[in-house]
Length: 194
Image 1 (tube, one colour):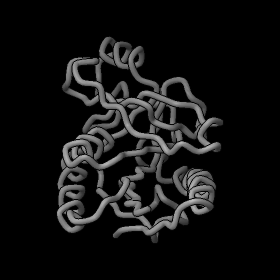
Image 2 (cartoon, helix red, strand yellow):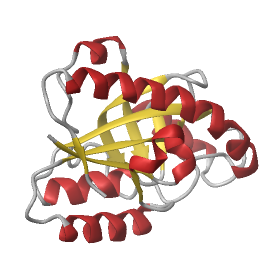
Image 3 (cartoon, one colour):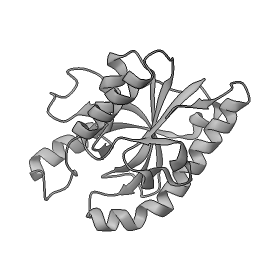
């Protein structure tokens, strides 16, 4: 089994950073990075495993989430469902699933109106800036996409606070992903693409 491990920035992958491909921050950077990667590996079958941090309005910091649906900013809610794949592993049964809202900016009261934030909070559990682009490109090319995220904030911190938290949080996320990979290795030979 070939896996392309992706995060926005190396800090989000922690000790798995040496295996990780980075998209950069934001949907435009992610789109460009994923297309370039897929073009380099167009003759190979692989799964994209996307890891990183998310903000959440109601999940505690440090909660690991398996993304079950992605909503893209700018699209009417539920117009087109973005439903990632899953590894069918025992370990996944213990992970909370979540709907992720992906936009080009931090989801916070400084960026969005309170009315819009309330609407988004009713539809999504967590928020990031790249996943909808990565998923859309993967789906366009027929590539399975799986995503695990860790909650870094409750929509209440700036980038400097996020930078201070990401080191500890990435250790926890990497440990969880490593357990998943170890379980996969019991039945599959795994190769990481870069």
